[in-house]
Amino acid sequence: MPRLGVYALIVFVLAVAAAVIAFTQGSWLGIVWVLLAGLSSNMAWYYVKRARDARRDSVPS
Image (cartoon, rainbow, N blue to C red; front, side, top):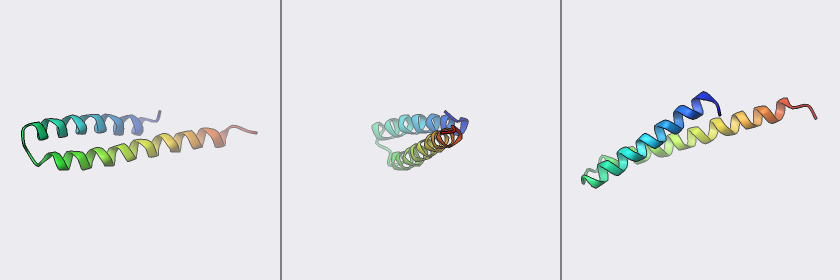
């Protein structure tokens, strides 16, 4: 897994944890954390897919 994909995955996990904590405390700030979690999740999938496609294209057939 590429380094940026790992970083995005870590941000995703932390954002989900922050959203859960914010919502359990009754704060509407959790919505921002949910949006950040969605963004970082998409970034992680993008970097994983990009690395997988690069590996597939580099293998000669």
